[in-house]
Length: 534
Image 1 (cartoon, one colour):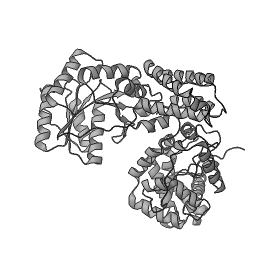
Image 2 (cartoon, helix red, strand yellow):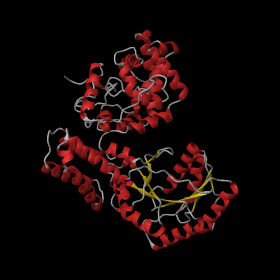
Image 3 (tube, helix red, strand yellow):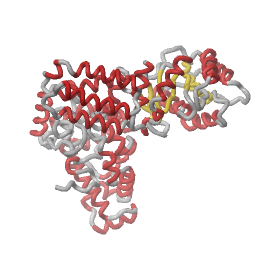
Image 4 (spheres, one colour):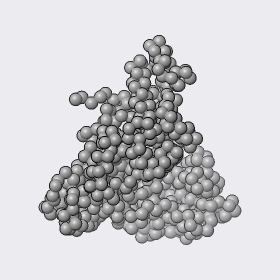
């Protein structure tokens, strides 16, 4: 998501942060580059102009020029304006209306309306325990109604029975009546799309709106359409009055033009983004988090939320006890690897970790992909119960048997065992027995609580680093170094946090997150990666 924009803005802003003092000419030169980067990302020209003008107005003020680190101040201004452009507060789908709440999905053909309808229905059913009815109003596209019926079966959500020969308006009227009779909380109307905007389409939308009285009208747009998405949003808003936007295929959008432009031009909030093909690949749109991702600051909050969703609470509690005792066997490692797969694999996690997004390509080139996790899990599953509990008994003959059973070789088994030892050492340190345990508890308390490991690290949450002044950050860094956690992230990584020259998060000891233990020993390299040449 936003990879190319992230790369461009990251290099421009990194050039500013390293400077001692900034002149007005320096700021103007940087903003010219920012302007070019946004235009290349397919952001609408009027949005780019407005954005750079606002940043320039604030960035050439006395507060910036006289601040301790002017470059960091400019980065903060760019970040704040990005958030303002995306919409200051995230807004979810509004369900505050008498039941059944009607949600009408509109958009062009091929934008992903039908699939998104199923995803939203599944999300409302699973997360908010709502009774949802889906209805397809697309009588033109062959088998469109059948497609929604099959999606309904897949996500276990009711769909309106298909009656041949009915018009879209008649189907909409029948759907609302059926929802009332069936005691449904929500009815989602999946309307027909066209390959282009025409009068017939708009008239049909207006008629459906009149008979169904929708509480939410969501425009579904493909994020890859770029600048044209803005014109699309304007047209639909003028004719049917949309209440929010849904952007699909965000996972494949390296530029981000549509996401950055549509909210600014229409004034309508982006409510939901599609991040993959699976039926649960849907995220709420949080402007601040998206701005953090674009500027390479990571998205720890979303990472934690994802972890909280995928972690089994009982397993997490058992894990916390083991960590306190400094115990960590191969069964635990298999659980950790499986968990990382659920959270989107290595690439998904990297994209959300501060300063780590640029590592994804390097990792896949080095064979650090989800296939590697699958091989490692296969190795562990090929062991006996005694071997998993006590890896020290694994001698040559046992390794030979395990390699044959898992379709790997002795070298891969040795790599896995080395990785396990690193992680076991890390767990001991995090249990409070190693040096720096107290600092780790303080820094990661909030994260641990979110992840169901609250008993492990009482008190203290993660500080808001953006609100700290450079002196505080520097002091925090020295404290971490004194505690033996000063490894930071490997040198040469992009991004990082202001005030931390190593580019790492203080207290994370080289990018280790409790409960996500698949990233041990970052300073020495990732598990399975060759060590860095000196």
